[in-house]
Image 1 (cartoon, rainbow, N blue to C red):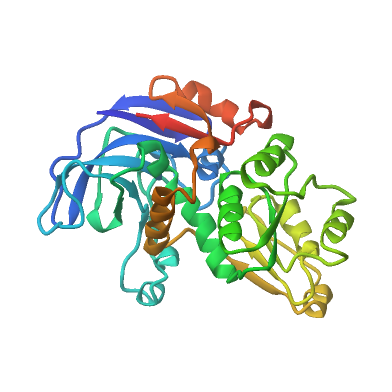
Image 2 (image 1 turned 90 degrees about the vertical axis):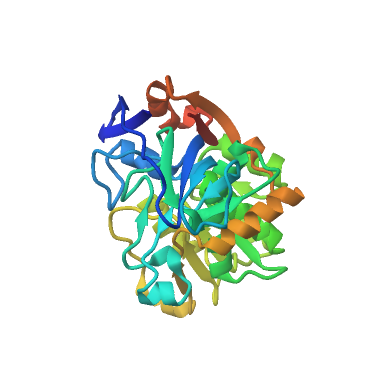
Length: 338
């Protein structure tokens, strides 16, 4: 079957690999139809993704069709179209017992720690499949990236009337914007890319979409009648931006790190205590996030179709992939059609 392997940073290879065979008990065999391209994939391409080894088959944002099911599977049937929850958890450690499977101590993510979906077929646990009878395969491929934003908003416990700033509005940040608005928050954004700022204005009605710079703090205070945002989400994965986000948080506010990077993050301890700030990390998503998002997408409350700005096929994705890292190409979200 057709398979795309990232052999080493900057080098893809198209190969023919054996089909996975029949699914075992509790498993499902899937035909991979669409693969969303994530920041994780782009970081792996340039050798900047933590917890990553080469060679690796990328792909964890998947829109799939069920081809066969193993013994004991009743969650899905042949022909179902699904989003895949790509987080393979152990089920026994403390986080799993608490229902926080997203940060399992033995967590393996498809396309990161184990081979993912940039191949024609893959076998996964059937419990990790989330069915929709109406959504398009491209929409299903974007559920996972939306789940990360939804989980971050849940971590922050936003309520109606809160002010929330999202720093970095790539696909993960856009998900945060979407679900912060659903929670009833007034949302502002900061991003260096003018196209992304305009996207937030046009698609989400964000009034205050700001560029980072010396005057950004004053602009935030002006927009909020002299105050700062109660909650700041940083989805940049850039160390400098992540440390700057610290200064955007109001007294008694909270900072949620959604993106992450390889190095250390530092902040001034006196300011942290003076503001009595809460600092949170947010990792991945849980199964319930997938279910909620698919429901909202089916109801029309969430529409990811405008996000998809670039598409590629198996035959040309390796050549197009490097350009998707460049801001000038205007990529919001790219999708691979297998």
